[in-house]
Image (cartoon, rainbow, N blue to C red; front, side):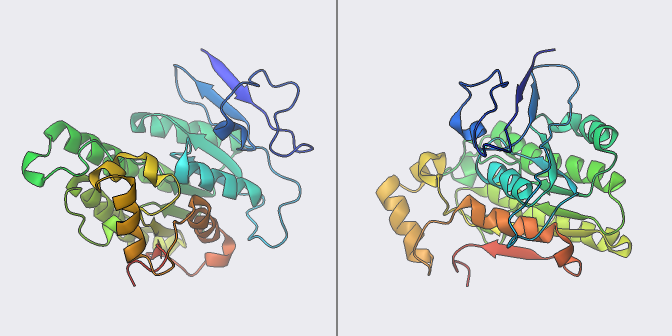
Length: 286
């Protein structure tokens, strides 16, 4: 089994410790102050951060909580993992296939003794963005729905089986789950499904005080101009015009802005919030 570890020193925030063997790792991973155990094969292991000793006093505290995060390799997921860590959480990070979720959750429980919350961020846009529904490829439809919806179901089922009363789950649709999105039907359909699944689950586990909520950012966030979505909108300049015309705040959102809301919903400050969808869209759907 091949395993690489990235250990960040608390005394030198954001920098690798001298004992770390991976000084040439990408800057993206360097910025996540965490211990990652990444396997190339074999059964999944929990990938964990160290608890910070002094989370910023102005932040909602998650100190002592163990929270699983999916989709943390980049973008929204990475920002969420960093936000949880900064607020004191120990974070078990999954980067593998949904078929291995049960084993990953079991190993997380075995390693940390419990699971206090979950942030399910993993998702894909697919290759059919900008493609009319009449010519959507079946294999792309299946890939997007399997990853964005079926994969979420597997994650939530495994998580809800082990969460204790009063714990929380936050899922990640987008504003495409709240309105139609022509020529993006697979992605939009799965994001609608994420909301339906989340609200249904909230009703089923609410008696135990377990909360299930959604944070739905719009697609107008930092990094979007490097994605296939831009090609579907006619290029960078056309995409910027379309985006800014719909956003009253007239700027691109940041992944950290959605991440901070997820952190709040996983905290004890959100004990009476469940079945809700928070839009982080600069007023786009207002």
